[in-house]
Image (cartoon, rainbow, N blue to C red; front, side, top):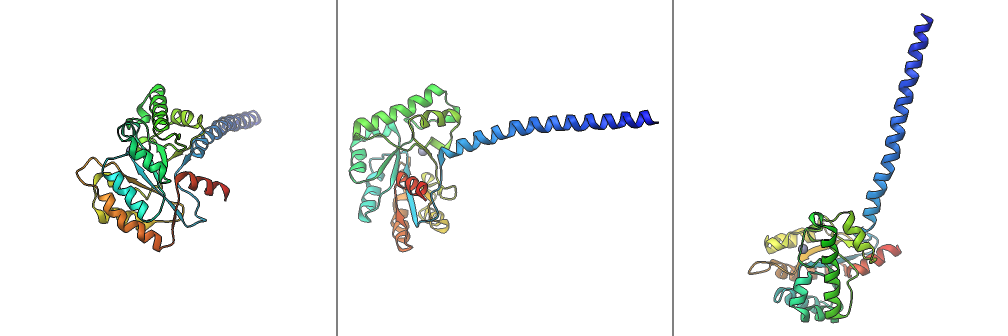
Length: 248
Ligand SMILES: [Zn+2]
């Protein structure tokens, strides 16, 4: 009887020991996994500080020969600065627009060369798309973009590695500030998406390049910008937003 009790006791101890070993193994693998994802998040910026009444307007996929010009005119009228995440392929085609953007104090970001999905691309392709666009913008405007936005917001470890090695952060947008304006959802829908949820530090996503015959974005901006000014928001570029947010 006593032997049986001892055996049960020993078995119980072994069970505890095995559980403990499993727990240690899981514990050891978890922190690494969490660390990797945290590390990835540190290189990815999607919202600025809530401490200041600032927002950053961002425009993707341009330059567009008509809509980008119209957007630049509106920004000039209100004397505000924005960030344009341009495609290398469009920058090559419309270098004069890139020059104007830089001259008028806007920030140029890299949005790849041909809008590939970088999560499905090889390391070589990612590197080419990123570097080529950096060089095109440098040859056109004598500046190198300091921010990168991957097409569709899709990135992986390779994208972070390549972009971070140039000390450039990956910049997405504040998740509720995506009006899907590229699909021409209607002027009112774009206005509603932007203004109904706007908060300090938001990165607002628009598209200056729209593959349709008209752009609802341009019209929507004519309401959005004066309304945000009325509400007391200041407009900053993405690099300014990152700097302000890091200082606080
Ligand atoms: Zn895009």
